[in-house]
Image (cartoon, rainbow, N blue to C red; front, top):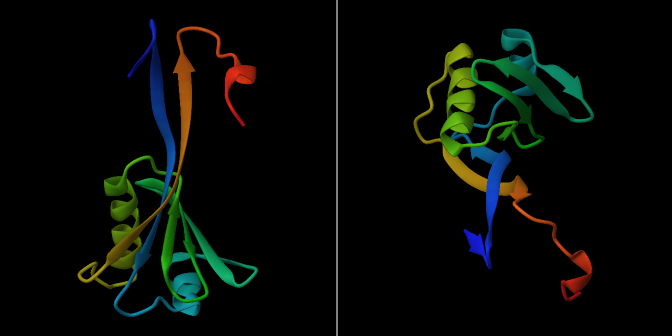
Length: 115
């Protein structure tokens, strides 16, 4: 995208995606079957392939952190389900916040931006 004479490089750093399973995940099964860690009412599971951090919330939904594409987030959720002997049919995705970084070719005058 060109801004005046410069251009902006935008890079997605993290796309938060929540997946709702037809049958909510059981915290105890995530801990015992795939090594999830309990923490303040949720269960956390770090995945290596694909690289992501999964949080199983109080309602048994899978929240995927650390990916920059929805496809990668879905692959991480699917891998967790497969390791637990479940399939991913009926999995519904809800998009969350996106963290991006920007690289401008020139300095940005922040004081010129209206409040």
